[in-house]
Image (cartoon, rainbow, N blue to C red):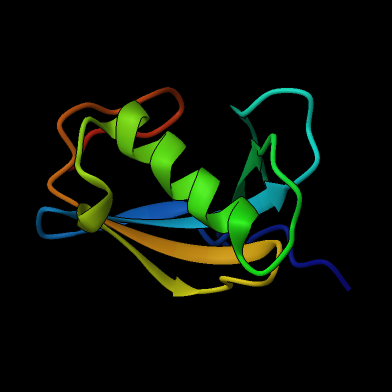
Length: 103
């Protein structure tokens, strides 16, 4: 049974200056873009095929541009070969919608 009083797990949170994101990847999209929040994940459409981690690599390059960081500032915690991923972005320079500012 669904507990409506229980707070929903967030799709992102801050650990100091590091943003942690739960991602739902959508490979084979027409364009790479940020979608909507679905439950505890941020949907991201990726214009790359999911072969040997290529879609994840494309996603990391895209997010580096969106967050104003180098690709080395983004760590894939889990999900390199899956659509469900967790990423850590160190010291993002900007925050695209719908990412909240810390605090």
